[in-house]
Image 1 (cartoon, rainbow, N blue to C red):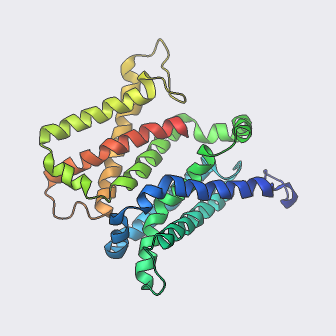
Image 2 (image 1 turned 180 degrees about the vertical axis):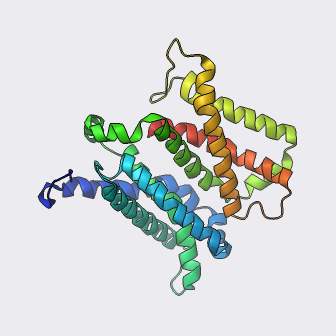
Image 3 (image 1 turned 135 degrees about the horizontal axis):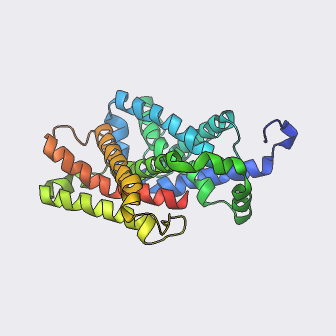
Length: 285
């Protein structure tokens, strides 16, 4: 629906395809976490205040993401809220569907347990539902979006870059933060290992987008010094990935009982995949 248009202008066929791609995206991007035992257990014992914060934080993130890649060309914030709501519903539906067919959810199970497991899975699934529109769209629709002047203005710029790094770091971080391996790896590492992991994360982030010249990357102008991209994009990107990793570990009770040094090491471990997610998001979205 375009600005000032009528209901007759609404392309129901394209919107239906967007819904199908959204459901497929929720399955494709969140299937690993659907099949993770730690996430099932978290739905049972996670502190409800922390879960509520996660669910609430996901709402503005989905709205901003929908503003960039909604199920159809989004021209108003009202349409972005609509698409974000649809993505959340698709995430809930996909979570319930998968958890039921694999036997995790059962008929007659206590309602708080069912709601907890579905709610925690719905967050990455809802992000996947919106990402499905970007990754699973047809070539012709992608071409139309490239011609959309609104799409150009709402996603470009430094703020848009930073936001997409947040999405990428959060999405990948949510997929691995609940696993026991994050903490086990941190106990095997020394402080020097953590420093090496941080350095490797920053180098990979920088190379992922700039040095390797991937499609969608940012090639520097010949007159731009090499350190400019490192300071302006890569370093803030890693700070974002580290902060989101810390938040994810806190939300999933992975930092409970750890001393500050061990918590930092554990965060550095999770920040490694989160940093890659932050860099990759800027390439594919």
